[in-house]
Image (cartoon, rainbow, N blue to C red; front, side, top):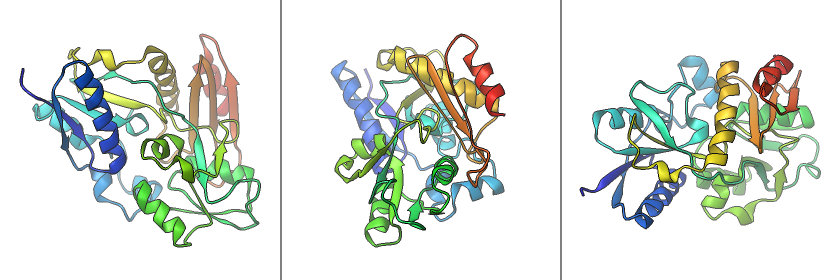
Length: 279
């Protein structure tokens, strides 16, 4: 059997994720190597995502080039952070597996939310975090921060921010969990759709990697993506949605944290009820 090729972005976190999938494949006797493919989102690092979204479509910002490599046959599978995945995939591609999810919460590094002084400077690149944090603490000064985890930690250590907000999953995967000073509960800050989960994308009908799928995670993430699809959401919509054991939690706000709307519920029509509650 010829060696399989896993497509990945080139960041440390993306490579950790790809190599994690590579190790799971190796345990099944599948030989694979990781191929780095640079995406549009990787090439534009000095513009806030929200501003970039106002200038151009952010659909596929971190996935388009990987998907092109899949369709061209240059790679056999692509490993993505699920929260980067558009709700609609190109024809001929599918999400074959969603492995078990890591912790979906957000975390503060540098201090705790309760102890932050008035007017403290907070670094985050996500409108979702910006809006929900503003709703909880309107006094905080929230500024955009781009770059990989190492870069953001360096900017914090240099004193550019008092605290920064990052996903727990990425910090744990890169060995930075010891830097976490406050785990933000999902009740206060609803995670992004798919946060903490990975997506294994392949050409349609390729069943070689279905063993990587974790059905409970898939069920939760698919419900979150159903909500996102119904909202028509993207980088310019400050929203979060998290499902655990069938319980759907969502939050939608204005960018400045005003008119924060939340919903918590379960049942067969929960997505429709959530949509009605937050629109």
